[in-house]
Image 1 (cartoon, one colour):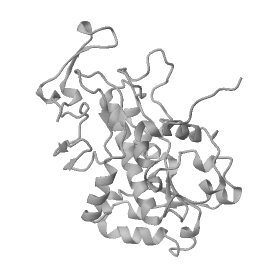
Image 2 (cartoon, one colour):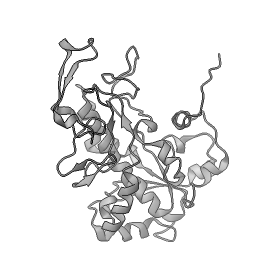
Image 3 (cartoon, one colour):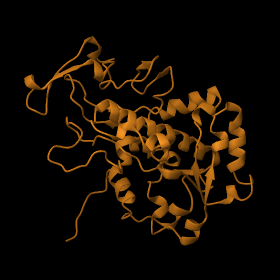
Image 4 (cartoon, rainbow, N blue to C red):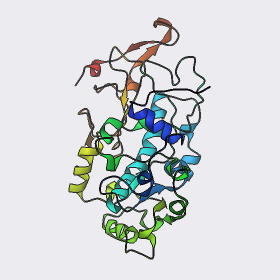
Length: 305
């Protein structure tokens, strides 16, 4: 029998597109949004998941914890950040890689999966709306990535599917600041050979493009980019918002995140809009409401900012 679902929420449309059951007009496949008129840019082998580090990472192995989930997502977001920036510099629309996560997203406390659900962990096809803030990206369409299955969609014209080139960026992988102009020149239209004229570039060994930017450009992108991370919801909380914000700049020290926390040392997951580190709280299941909700005890850092 047919099934019906509302598509008013941005996340619903993203998920239907990922499943290749949402149909867009031809323009959606021909060019990007706004000034992204030069085609598309994707990451080879699902970005971080395709690297040696990603394929053999202990983050994908049990036991699964909140801290491991956040680190897994952040490792992948480092590649997404580079892909989004490089695509912008080339006038291309970014194509999201397939992403993995450990915890589902649900508007109540849970221990990784929605109670009574049959979700396998790790989640090998983590929805884009779990990780990126679509409400922000939908007002900046040129930054909204196409879904990971975009290049395989049956609606993409065969000629465009064939206009695709795999490009290794290994020679730029050391992320030297002075090499950014050389990187962009090699990939833009009129660059080496016919690279720039291809409809889609699929790049491997992408460097850390953010750290190749001039400091003023870093500051400009950080101001916008810190609003793009969504949140993990919801872990057990000490009568706080139990969500944890994803941070596209988790590896930049120092930096201030979207809710005003300044990290001068290694990033750590903190509850809601507080400085309370998740790992500094104690969780006692014997004294909790039930087997799924422990009693949580935290310190003074649990006060809102």
